[in-house]
Amino acid sequence: MKVWFAWAGACAALAGAATPVEVHGRLSVEGNRIVDDKGDPADLRGMSMFWSNWSGRFWNERLVQAVREDWKVSVLRAAMGVEPDNGYLAHPTTQEARVRSFVDAAIANGLYVIVDWHDHNAQDHRDQAIDFFRRMARDYGKYPNVIWEIFNEPERVEWGVVKGYAGPVIDAIRAEDPDNLIVVGTPEWSAKVDLPADDPITGSNIAYTLHFYAASHDQWLRDRADYALSKGVALFATEWGTCEYSGTGRLDAAETANWLAWMDDRHISWANWSLNDKAETCSALQGGASSYGTWNDANLSASGRIVRAAIRERNTWYDDFVVRKDTVAVPGTILGSSSSDLEGPRLEASTDGSSRHLAYIDDGAAASWTLRADRASHLSTTLRTASANEGGSVRWLLDGAEVARSSVSGTGGWESWKEQPGPSFSVPSGVHVLRLEFSGAGTGLFNLDAIAVSAAPLAAEATAPRAPAWHRDGNRVWVEGAAAGTARLLDAGGRLLDQAPVRDGRASLTLPVEPGVRLLVLPGQTPRLLPAVR
Image (cartoon, rainbow, N blue to C red; front, side, top):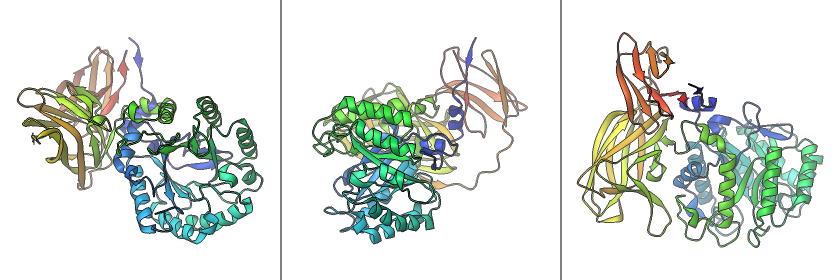
């Protein structure tokens, strides 16, 4: 019998390290690389939002959660429009509120987020930028998630002009936030990265912006960027496209592949332009796509399909976590479509194809989600459901133990969505499996779109006793030093595989011979990963 131990990151995940920020920590610049808190290349890959003043419907937490789970992004870019219609200069309160809400969502989902002063003439708006970044750094500088991009794309101005603008803005940020990464734009739409290489800004954790569009920029710009790297400056491709520099025109898949390989080789982090449905080639979405990220292939543009695949292929470390891509942070929103295990129900697209929900929920069906609670909390739930029938009942289990029961009523139609109250229950900090078991009259009880979860803190958790010890002998798991109660063995879907009473601190459980993830749940302890037997 050969025992395979999951990657060490899986064990870290059970301790709570399940998100990009928990894995990489605070970023910094070492030489010509952006590295994590262990000194390893950060290699962030993700998406840029479109101008905030023209794409507000996409700037929401459900989208952030969905692209984290499905696209596996590790970074999102909040491109706050400054000059154009309805931008920051005309409506500072509205635009800043939109950015703050988006940053809050990214932090809640454990993602890095670039706060982008999306301006082509920032040198003319320096005072406004100083005021904005000072406030934002005061409130968000404590979070390692946040990256400051202080000038999106300087146009045809000298590097000295950009440098003169950047100095006071950086000073304002550093007065509130001494550590987080700052990215500075470069002349000619952030393509002249050779200029700061020859005349860098003095300071720590400063990188420079490289923007490219694959159908317009090829080897000549990579050569220029290689020169900058050879001079020891760090680059961040905070915006790049698969198409022409206009954002539309021809899509160049071959040159996109060349750029991706080049960035991989040099460990350059990136965000693709853009997560939007505007009728242009570089938009990742087709017109009318859902605002909430629940897309199928038909909702993605050709560019969107290429970039989603590129992110998922590169951010494969998500797959190495027991807390998988569908892990949900609570409080938050549990999407029906993010279930980690289904017994009977299936995912169904809405009539217009813009979103997916849990459907075909019949008597005896079940669904599970992997949850992460950063602190012990009392959770309150609200279900968004629809049913042309009478509805049904739900049995709620946390880590295999029943915590509540609730009922769902009919709404008059399979897409007549209604908010219905769910139960409240307490959850300790850590990683948990939530399992819902459905019952009712016959088939087609109801559809489930989402479960909204709010939380109230519990009293401080008592200092944990010394962790119980366990070992495996063949297909038996032996536990010593456990608290009184019941020891349980679950699969990744929360199904009970075996259980045994703890007597004098000891218990013995039987492992199935089939391969798969197993969780050992002991009284008063966070579930722990058991190595899979193959």
